[in-house]
Structure formats: C-alpha cells, structure tokens
Image (cartoon, rainbow, N blue to C red; front, top):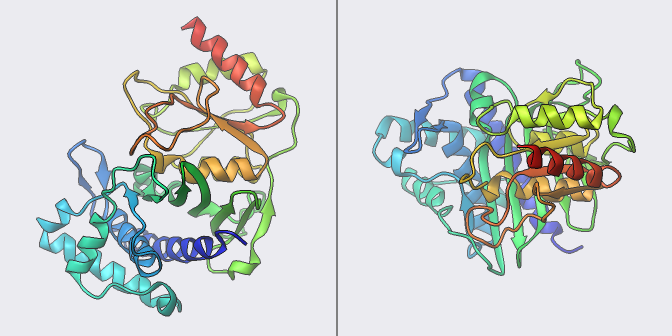
Length: 339
C-alpha cells in the first residue's frame, strides 16, 4: 500500500511526541517563553519537534520539513536547552521503537534537528508539515492541543497524523480515558486509536451523517483572535443551529468532526492580512476528506499547500460533511456580504 511506511513512522513519531507532552503537563513545568511574535512556546514544543524530525531523519534523511519552531531561543538559554534535552531522552525511553525511529544522542544534534524544520516549503515533490504542539495556549491551560504531522507530495497531502493527548477516547464516555491518535492515507480512509495501543488497533471513523444543518453543532477556536466568533454566531443563526458551539484549540477540531463528535468547523479570519500556516491545516484537511467531508476556504477554494509556509491563496476555513458543506458555504458567503 502506497505510503503505509510513511504513516507508520509518522504515527510512531507523533506518539513519542505525545508522551513527551504528557511528561511536561504532569510536571506542571512548561518552561513557557515568548517568541518574537509574542506567541508562547514551551519545552514541549521544542522537544516534540526534535523527536519527530529525528524519526523522519532516520528513515527519510533527505525529506525537507516545514516546522513551526527553531532552536534560536534554546541556543541562548542553557538551562532551557538542558531541560528540553532531558525530555527528549526520557520520552524515547518510554517506548520500544528506538531501533526503528532512533534516538537523539546529544544536545547539539537536537538543536540541528529542530532547525531542520526551517524549510520554506513551496511546490516541491515531497515535504513534511509539522506542528509539534498545535494549540500551545490550550496546552498551557490544560485544554485541547494536538501534535500534527503531514506528508505533502506534489502539493497534495497524502499522509496525515494527529495526536490529541487530552481528547476522550470515547466522546460519549467520560470514563474512557484520554489520548487519541488519528491517521490517514489519501484514498485509504480515516482511522483512530487510543494512544498506547497497537497501530493495528485503529478503527475507521466517519463524519456524522446529518443532512439538515438545524441539528448540527459547530467546532470553533477558543481564541477570539483566531476566528471571528461574531460572524460564526450569525452563520449559526442562518443555518438554524441552536446547539452551543464547542470551542477547542488546535487541529483537535478537525479530528473531532472527522469522527462525528461535531459537524462543522469554521475559522473565519479576524484580519485581512493574516495568512494561515500550512502546519495548522495539512493533517486535518486530509483527515476530514478521508472521513467523508470537504475542507475549503471561505470562498470555496481548496487549500493550496504549494505557496510556502502559509496558505497565501486561501482565506478562512470551512469544513463539513459532503451533504451540508455547500449549504454552509452559501451562508458563509451571505454573512461575508452583510459585513
């Protein structure tokens, strides 16, 4: 099966990174600092990027990676660097796959691996898109976040893996435990399994089967700065949706609607100049498509992953099942016209 090995390596790497994030959250010592754009970054972001790129480098050493983080802060902060490296070592000892995806032998190697994610992207034959901790603010508050990795070949996402350490295994059972890995290969369907289970334990998932938007529920961003809550409330009104929106950070929203927890994911920009990052959407785009949904921007255009590190040609996100996507998009256009 095409790309089966890539999916396996991606799952193993993402699961190791998820374990690293749990070590950090359990310790209550996130080591949060601010980047140049004032957004937060934690030791978990750095560590997760290192272990995932380390796994990719072992198997696919020439594959470029478009990753969110770089090592500049760590190179200037010895204590923070040592903390991250200890997390990288600890997380690698918690699984039995080092023979397959390797381990990181030194701090300097860790820094170089993190910086391998500086690739600028574009219309290339093959690259990976990585968000080591998508939804860092959610991670910091103990909410939803995700570890996201996607393989893009000739501009098409062909493999997607999303790890959601704080998502319920069974959304209908509060006692089911937390931690889910979602994975997909283009043309092969979408799957999920509990973190810690065998890769073969994955079960197929599907979008909800609703055909009438009045019974739908929204997933949207927690942060008002990420998406226009006001416009989305108006859209819900016009669609006849009465259920309160489910707000969560990260690509956990894509994962949730893909397995039928929710029905529609909207992300409408609050700034005319903001450009979405490709690592924030690549895995989720394929997961929803393989689960029976459609992802476009707010103008109905498919997401274009060939323009660099951002979705320069797209504005906003509309994700829904095939049965209702056209109706949702129609109402989105109506609300945009009203504005």
